[in-house]
Image (cartoon, rainbow, N blue to C red):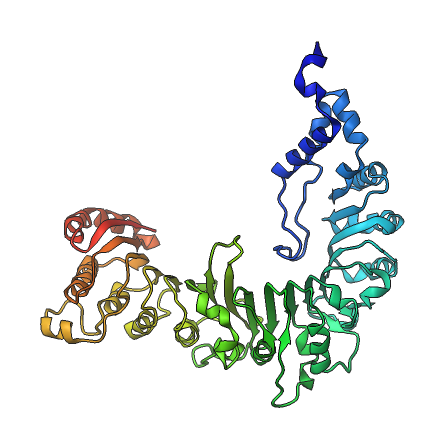
Length: 527
């Protein structure tokens, strides 16, 4: 009777597809070249289908007899699954994701026996004491290897001689297309580099100490297959050879993503010579001098980009933006399109001083943002800063004046109310004054197309809603339309949170009716 049940009569090929779909449903992984992989490989969970072997004897027999089901293996606390996969995958290409250093070292003898059929090899961080084993690995020919990712930990008191030189990638890995190396010495040479689609060199050095910047670009320009390039501290190892007044144009026809982490002047130099498409995903990290005083330092973000911003055509497509102080590190981020669509483009700018914080640069960062992106068609903006970081309403007014197309604004100011609302009202005189002629005559209207406004983390005070109402009233008197949505979230101080919450709950309902004149939907709360 069991043979009459349709599921028992499925062709083996269909069963295998079911196994693979079951594994995919529980898998968390990122595709090569777009991965958030930093130090350890993301688990593929490719053997998530194994539980289906317990359904019946036939299913188990099909699984054991299908080598392709055993091609992709996560190696965690033991080598058990690796040994099974090697045995059951027969001669099918192998993809190995090793997550634990000690187990990875124990796995190297097994890996070497399968070098002829390795297709992917992603390894966990290794220590200096592991160098002998790693050298053996890099001296082994792996003709099918398509992707290699490996990280070597180097502590501050260790010298660069700790790095392993893997020489030319052609010698042992002729099929390599995707590489992430950290703290290695590598040959920046053809033809190996010209075959790369994903190339991530983090704190690496070139084998050739005499390599010039122009020679570096010669090799880079030959990388016509390159889709994702990430250089962290690599260009600075050759940058001292950049001649004054150097000019060149490098075309990478398939480039989709570019990450540069170098001193600002080198970021500018590299971005000035690489031709970037309008849909690029660009991330620039300026490695700045930690001795700089962020309060007295200006134009750090512009110093990272080309003086001629027309070299960044992506700016003209950016519709969403954020200016954030993220743990005292200021980040400017702009993007357009849906993150997973073909038209997605983004620009991320970040300052890295080698310290945990670079506190105090936020007002200058807003000025930098205006300088760089005032020509962009930005429609949605999020601004987040720490309490007391932006001291004047003039800074907010400068930002708002540069964003005439914005229809959605979220501000997490961490400040007293009047600074943001003064700027939104378009005047700097005390908001609660009633000089109507001055209110109408003062300055151009800011954010004329604003439809949705959310203000977070505002300090509560007795005059809180008075400032809000007066700001919106003055915008209305100047001919601005009613907002579609207004949301205000007040900050409750830790030591007095219940009193403040009680006062907000008592006062806010009296203002809800008044808000109907200025916003179709009004919501309030606290953080």
